[in-house]
Length: 92
Length: 83
Image (cartoon, rainbow over the protein chains, first blue to last red):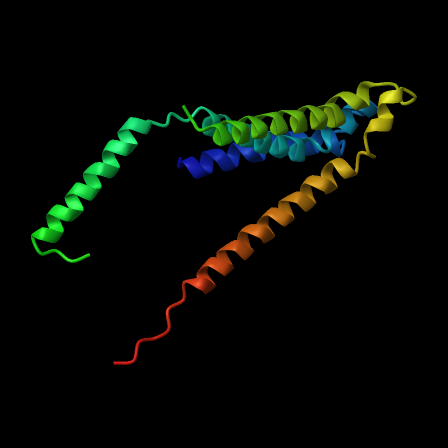
């Protein structure tokens, strides 16, 4: 089974479970609080995923490891290479 | 070490997403189990908005991304060269 089919079948199973609880398809009569939690649940999971993604991006931006000395060294090497190649006839 | 601005922006994003997550979790998961005459219900909109507002936000995001792509593609169009 391809990954797509795996994901789709997993999502379908979860979707059926959610619909069964939310729309009371088996006549189980869940308590009012459970119904109130259940029906926004897919949107809640999406929002939670969005928050997690945003937080991870922010954290990675804040802890990114700039190497100032390596950057300066690289810039110097680029200038050196440019002058060298220009002398040898390559036009930029 | 990331620059000062980078750190501020990054931690700001972390804080914002954490606040949003906590508020939304309280709204969707915790509030139904709290008595309806508790004072905390005054800090949250009716439950319908917990689905409508993220829907609108998602729509705005898609519009923004689409507009951005359209603008960038428009700027990068090259006129046909005459030989």
